Length: 538
Image (cartoon, rainbow, N blue to C red):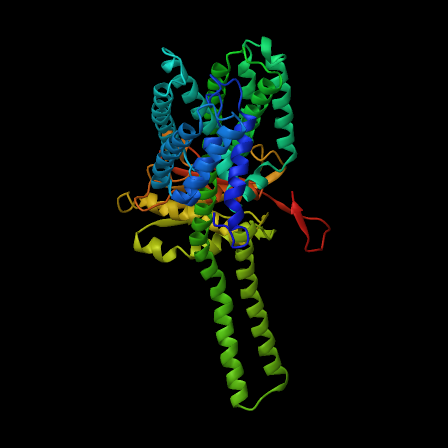
């Protein structure tokens, strides 16, 4: 985050003011009047500030620590010792900041589970080291009673670790414009109000009167955290655990409930935060994988549809060339009138046809839009089969196409051709492993009542090959992404094909057997009004 020129001089004073506010709000149940409290979120603010500004943040952080001792605690250690102890805290926290900055730079600190655990180890180890040295200095100065060193080390260490673990993710998100925008986009929903309301209700249910609470029902606090994590990922979780910690701290401070086991309560909240963050990051990673898979499918679709594009554009481009030569011939002969006008009109029609093909493919890649039309089964099989004749002859494969029924499917022709092309291509690969004379592919079609589709009549196309078939184990994984029997295959062709079929209200499946059998089914098209070119699914 880089501050603009008019506001950069306000950043450091704003940091000091916010640091003092955090310090005052969480100055709860201190030991010996010192800054030994069960929850210290102010170091989280300082660490994020360090990640952004590096060593330039040392001076304002030191000033914030000194002012906190003066304004919040009344400087119990005296001026000189307060200045020296604040200097050590800045150095100690600064070392943690240096390690974090070296490890993560200015990139996302909480983008993966691996980064989360790295951050946690650095924070816990750094806070404990800082804690031991700081408490030792206080003990040497006589500010801690003899024999209490271990107790105050535990108390201060818990306070720092809990404060940083619970608060730093949210502070980090709020520290940059992209983080604030993503947080706003994530939580600015009615659902957020729902889980925040649930959190308030659960706090009341768990604690009631916090002075008499024994934390027996603390596990109810997992409900709003799991809700936030599962629905909104890490960003929702960061907001949720901070709100819970703020609520617990507020109850303790304003009820002056100093006799409860606050450190135990804060450790429970730290565990709650870690569980929530882990769930949130897993949810974010799964969503990222899903988005990556969608992108991979689109790239696979681009490759598959390139063949369809080439096939569809071949005819109009050939026709354009022919009509262009005709126009050139007519102009050379000095002829005009109706003949030249007709040739130009035909060129325009073929150009429009080519543009329509490109536009349909572009819309499919952008939005998944389809142009549904009646697709004749016989014509579909004939168009696709012709594209394989050269390869079939080259590999000695016999293609048998049974008589097609005079039926039409309601579908986007380009996309259904892509599916059938995928099936024939897979069948060709399967039969190549067979000896000469045993390589055959058969395409058949039949009308049936589609229990599989849960609708009326449908047309089922079947592609059979003489390959080794699909085993039970392979059938269970065949339509999963990146599962392929081809050495050079990405395993996305069948995934894309099934997605297209389901988008059409149809289905695609493989049958287990000693040879390959793939079937696709689509609803039949019927006329809405006899004699008109309008169709709906049967």
